[in-house]
Amino acid sequence: REITKSQAYGLIQLANSADTLLAEGQLNPNSINNFSKRAFVETAKSAPEVQQLVSEAAQKGDRITRREVKQLSDEWTAMSSDLLPPEVKEKAEEGVLPSRHLAPLVKEMEKLPDSHIKSLQKEVAENPDVDTVKIVTSQARSLAKYLDAAAQVQTLKKTPLDLEMALEEALRLDCLSTAADLVKQATQLEQTVGKLYTTWKRLGSLADRLYVDTGASSPHLRSMLSSLESLSGEVIEVRLDEAGERTVRLRMMTEEQ
Image (cartoon, rainbow, N blue to C red; front, side, top):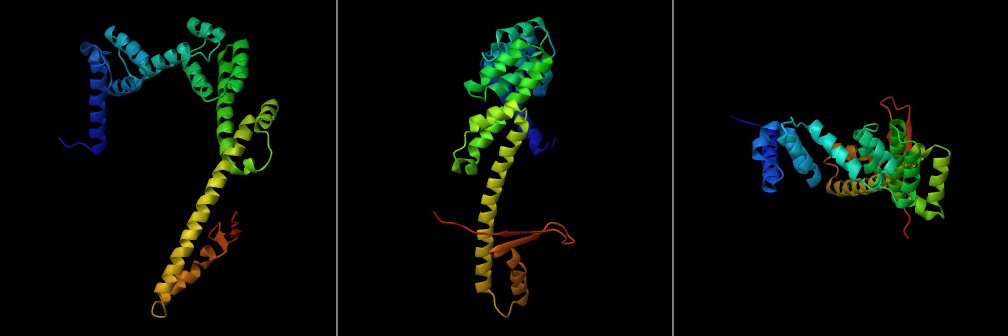
């Protein structure tokens, strides 16, 4: 019967996943029917330790879906990580702290330098409960966003700025998320300006070429070029609404260094 291209690729991925698990001896062929199709693919993508846990569960007769694979993966991530303090792991073993909350924390902390990990570890060790884990996870995520975005903002590199001290102040004032979003938007703005300049130069080049190739015999093309001068000239003018009540004007000024 006919199948779509996406269905075909899905079946190929499923077959490759089965080959991988069987070839590596991680799966008993008799327990294959205990897997859903998606669980099979997710298991093949997982770490060898997770594959072993999933295979053992399947051999016991458990039904394996993507949910079970994710749960086992989260448990392994949480219990095998050196980033979680002993107090937290103890609560996880007791079932007080579900692994589904700890795995995101580990993944976010892995993105951070040691200097920032220690303070987070101390905070979660002092209060090893779900609410604290969620708060610390959010802090770790904002920290990672801040550090990654700040490193990319070229404007910040022009001035003698201590980004670490700015980070410490944002933490003290409980406005880390806002600071992280600020530097992220700054990065996006710089990238947008760079793309704008490249597009503007390209537009001007095309307009000049078309002007040379046209003449009095092509009045409509010339009219189009005249209309686009508000975009290809030194001053770019763009209306923000159809009524023309709000207009943005940008002057393109480049400086060679």
